[in-house]
Image (tube, rainbow over all chains, first blue to last red):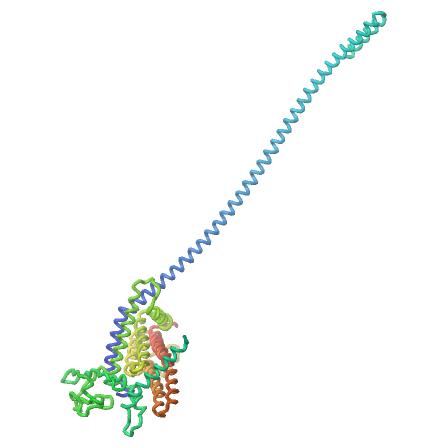
Length: 165
Length: 337
């Protein structure tokens, strides 16, 4: 057989075998293989896509969480500062009230003391007068009885004292 | 264990196989002067034959099928054409005789068609069966679609994806899916044919012009039958050039229609046949010089060449498929003016 002239038999067999091979492999090998390759590719693409989405969602969620957290923190601070203010004002009020009360009590006490003092002074004065009268009586009883003028003088004195009272 | 040991074993294995098959051809190719006819041996290997000579004395007779006009089909074993020393019988058999690799009718006027299962047809069958077994096996592994590829599947999946994504898709364009099964069959047919041809006692299947011609013709018809308006317009009335030029371009374009498949046919045929010839020439040198030194050296060269030929086997399959895709891509391309 020659090198450059194609043999008819070989052409016939090649056509037959190659076309059979083509048809059989197309139906039973290439189609299922390429189909499942495509499906797998799609599956991988989708998986990657969903993973990406999930990641994005996670980031979003984290951001939201942080936002919420910062809002909560601010609120807490606000509440705390408000509470402080309120407590401070309450404290001040209480202090003022206490002071007022104390002042009131003190003034009341002072006035009571004053009146008591006056009373006491009066008592003291009375007692003193009585005492001095007693003393004077005793002295005078001793001496004045002797002298009428002197008795008069003492009486004058007593009058004077009573007057000055 | 020395990592080089398998490699040397491999080389020795090859030397042994090559020399044994050369011994086989040596006797058959001895010319009358007793000298060894290496050229004859090489041609004997390159060309088709009616029997499959694996090594000297081990010959598988193949069926001869002839369609003779007015007589119908005749079928007989090719061993009937030869005597016990594998020499062709002068008187022939069943009205046919063997002469220099061809079968002729004794009656010169008889018209007939030779459909014999020759050596190449036989290896064509083997290639086809091997492909069927491998790819049906691979396809069966895709039953569970989301599983990772395993075993033989992971060997061929990258190749299939490579052909799909790097050869067919970029060259044909968006309509590639219609042509993908043909391109896959084409690539693996050429690749398997090339590699099987490199095995010891392998036939020169893809280095046969009939095989490459059929493949090129299929691509040719596929290209021109799927050619769109734009494609034919470019051939018969090339746009964007002066009218005079169009008349000059027309015959060039028409010649171009036929040179494309012609180049496909010749490229594969030449690359594979030349590879076989060079490989056999190196081995033949041993017998020309009749020296052990030359024998060892040329065997080593032959091994190196064999490895290169393995590369060529892949490259030629790639090139044939790629050019088929390019031609089809040109035919189905939409106008971009």
